[in-house]
Length: 164
Image (tube, rainbow, N blue to C red; front, top):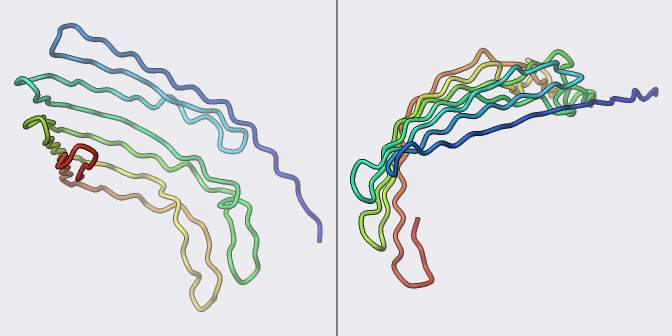
């Protein structure tokens, strides 16, 4: 059995700027990217957001972000005969997310957050069983779009206890 050495080099960058034009508004702009010797360059993925106080203790937010996940070593190079096979041609997963939400401090002990979101996932890294075999393989999926509502209620019911 001959072993092949795999060596990957990654250079990454993340930057974010926060700007507050007035006491009620916060603007955020950022970007993330990487250059990986296996996967190549990701390009710059943006992150943008605005938060505005619409009533005392109540904030509206609009967010947009793009992100990626580079395939891990095991997803590309694993080779366990009759069990699992990696795929050297796997591409990065990418995701685009849009969020609209509201967050409110209802009173001293209760906080409510509601968020509507839409996300689009491309090149999802999946693990599938091979037909008529015990072996599974890693592949990039076609992608999917998801929509939803996320609600979070946080309540402090005793001095040292929170319910989320």
